[in-house]
Length: 147
Image (cartoon, rainbow, N blue to C red):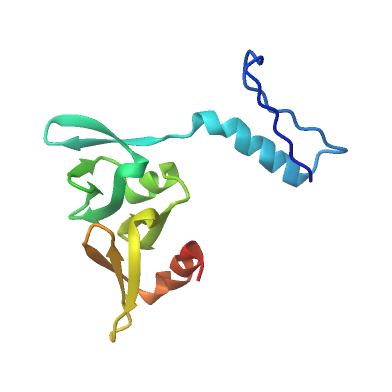
């Protein structure tokens, strides 16, 4: 498949043109992906006390369920959300990885992994904090970081 991009300030709007010999599942998948791009979320609405914030996905380190509440953590702050973990996961981009039944991390902030003697995986984050994952989630973690 050949791809070409034409850039010009003469264009009045952005347009994507797909020219194919026939419609295939692969082409349909590409078209669907592009059409949905404008509908994608880029942030999560969260609360801190009575105040409501809109936090960009890029700022989120981890999402964790504790005492039936979803906590959304950034480098310097912690927020809560009314969403369930699975609902938040549906909104998040691919750079987020579920590491346990109760936690999702942003792999962009993953520093390194350590295997522990009791079979857990200690996940060190770039902000100096750490969390744990079970071996059950080791395969998707390895795939996400390219091991």
